Image 1 (cartoon, rainbow, N blue to C red):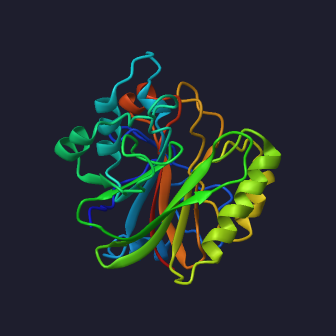
Image 2: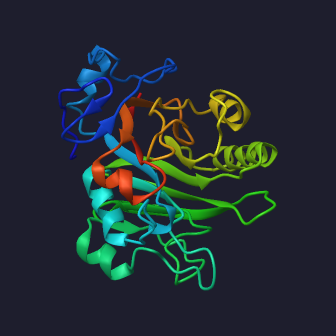
Image 3: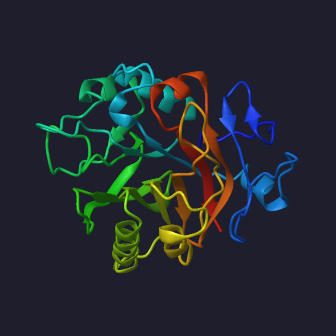
Length: 281
């Protein structure tokens, strides 16, 4: 795996441009605390080959704060994070053919990832703007789209993966602006995952559009999937909202997590990407 231990500043690692937080972590989540000291379990995990780095990024259709659409800049941000699995939101244009923002040739020639082929629209990378990228060495066991109740087009995507021999289920989502519909969508996603005939450790992540710290759909998800304390990721210019979330099943442990806030990430989108390192609990 490509995960390496590094000295940690409680809020920012200047070289990597990362914000980190560990407030309100549930018992199954182990992360670095504000003093920069890891727990014993976390330190053991840093040497474990079963660790997987995951990330979620609302890429705002590739349009940065300079109002320029720059897919190469998005790939630069993803390369800085260097995650094994990435859930993207707003990865396709909204109108017309809903064409992918990152051209296929650019992804193939200038990155180490492949897009999970959800196959709904050959012009798109994902479905309703949601995509999952995995390393080209990963095995995609199964994948499917999840229909969500909504007033406007919304959906989620799911992929069963095997990464360096470790199985993991990943769900990417972008939930509604309405609190009522967000809760309905959360219940639909939970029901879909729980109804699977093949259980495996699961990561649910994406832009939840939830401003309340512990209410609404976060409470619904939290009954099943504890949320990693990645920190605020919106707005990229001055992050105050924790709209983007990573949630894990209780058979996974979060070793480390944070918000990636390099100079490039602060320009590339209105959201900052979030990330976490997980391992079997």
